[in-house]
Image 1 (cartoon, rainbow over the protein chains, first blue to last red):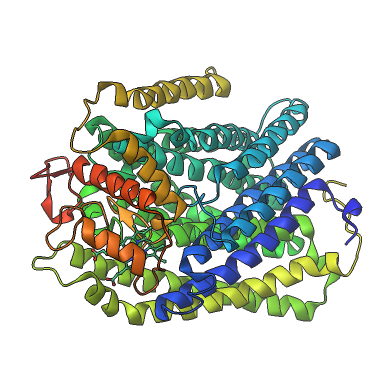
Image 2: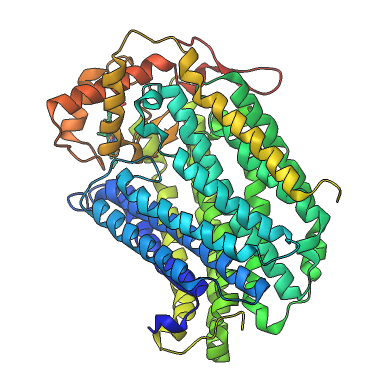
Length: 447
Length: 140
Ligand code: HEC
C-alpha cells in the first residue's frame, strides 16, 4: 500500500474500514456465545469479545467521521489539509487502538461500558483529537460563509472533546463516591458522545447530498440550520431519557423527557420531505453514495420513530434494559451511521472507477443483502426485547435463566442475521479496499 | 438571518455548561448514607470495572444483557453478599470464575451495598404520573 499517495482523509477512511471488519468478526463471535455459553470461554469469552466488538465498531464510526470531515473540508476549500498534523493524529490513533485491543485480549479492563480499556489509553485518543481540532481550525478559517455541514462538523469535534474528557470524571473520588451522580454523568456522556459523532456524520450526509446534486441547496438552507440547532439542543439536553428509573434529580428526567419530545419535529420533517428527496436525480457516478444515503434515510425514519416512543417514560419502562435498546443501538449504528459512512467511502474512495460492471452487480446484491439482514437482525432483537420487557413487569416472575432460555430462538435468528450482515459488509469492504491493495494510485477526491 | 449561527451556538453552549455544572455540584448537597463506607465503595466501583462485570450485568437496567440486573442483589431474598461471593469465585454460564483477592472482593461487595442503598430498580415498583413520567414507589 503506498500510503503517501493516499490523501489524509482517505487514510482515515481505510483505517476505519479495517476497524469495521474487526468489529464484525468480534460481533459474530460474541453472538455465538449467546447460543453456546462455553464457546471460547476459556480464551476470549464474552467478557473480552464484547469490548473488542464495541470498541472496533466505535472506532469505525469515529475514524470514518474523521475521514469524512477531512475529505469534505478539502473538497470545499480545494486545498489539502496539513498532512503532518493528520499523520501524527493517525499514528496516535493506531497506537491506542493496538494498545486497547491487546489489553482486551489479555483480559485487562478498567474503564466504563463502551470504553472498557484502562483510562491510560484515553490520553493518546484525546491528544489525537486535539490535533484534529487544530487542523480543523487552520482549515475552516479559509471558508467564508459556513454551510450548515461545516457547523455540524465543528459541533461534533468540540463536543466530542468536551464529553470525552467528562467521560473520565469518575477518576476523581468526589464523583465516584456518589453512585447516582456518577451514573448520571456516565449517561450524560454516553448520550452526548453519540450526539457528537452524529453531528459529524449527519453533516457528511448533508455535504454528500449537495455534492451528488451538484448544488448548495442543503448547505445554505434555513431549515437545515434549524434542524442543526434542534439536533444540537438534543445532544445537550435529551440524555436524561436514559435515566428514568435512576433515582436522580427529577428535573434531569423531566428535561430529558421534554427535550426528547422535540424530536417529533425531525420525524415529521422526514415524512414531509420524503417525496422530494426520492425525486433527486441520481447521477450515474454517484450511484452507490446515493443508494446508501437513501437507505440511511429509511433507517433514520424507523429508528427515530422507535427512539421517540422509547423516550416516553411509560413506554420506556417496558423497553429499558431489554434487547429493544440493543436493537435501537444496532439499528442506528449500522442502519444510519454505517450507511452514511459507506456512502462517503464510495464517494471518496471511488472504487467503481476501477471495477467492471459485473462487480457492480455483486455490490448491488450485497447492498440488498445488508438491508435485509439488518431488518431481520433488528426485528429479532426487538421481539426478544418485548419478551424480556413483559417478564420484567410480571408478577409472579419466572427466574432470570428461565426467561433467557425462552429468548433462545430469537438469539439464533439474530446470530444468523449477524452472519448475513458480516458477509454483506465484507463484500462491500473488499470492493472499497481492492484498488488500494492492488496498488492503484488514487487521486485525492478534491483534485 | 439577523441572529447569526454563532450566537445561537454560543447561547446553547452556555446553557449546556450551566446545566453540566449544576450536575457536577450534586454531591455537595447530598447527605451521606451511613449504611456503607463511601471510600471502600468508590474503590469497589473500580473493581467492578476492572473485572468488567458491566459487560454482562446491569445496574438500574443500564449495562450488559447476559446476566441479571444486580442493583439490589445485596438485599434480595435468598441472594445477598454470600451469593455474590460464590458467583464471582465459581462463575456460571458465560460468566468466568474470577481470581480476585479478598480485599477486592470486600470492596466489590461494599460497592454493591452502596448501589443497593441508593434505591430500588424493580421496574414493577414504578407508577406513572399524569405527564407520563414514572416514579418508583416503596423507594428505600
Ligand atoms: C461474560 C458475562 C458475565 C460477566 C463478565 C459477569 N457475569 Fe455475573 N452472571 C453472568 C450470567 C450469564 C449469570 C447467570 C444468569 C442466569 O442465572 O442465567 C450471572 C450471574 C451472576 C450473579 C447471580 C445473580 C442472581 O441474581 O442470581 C451474580 C451475583 C453475578 N453474576 C455477579 C457478577 C460480578 C460481581 C461480576 C464481575 C466481577 C460478574 N458477575 C461478571 C454473566 C457474567
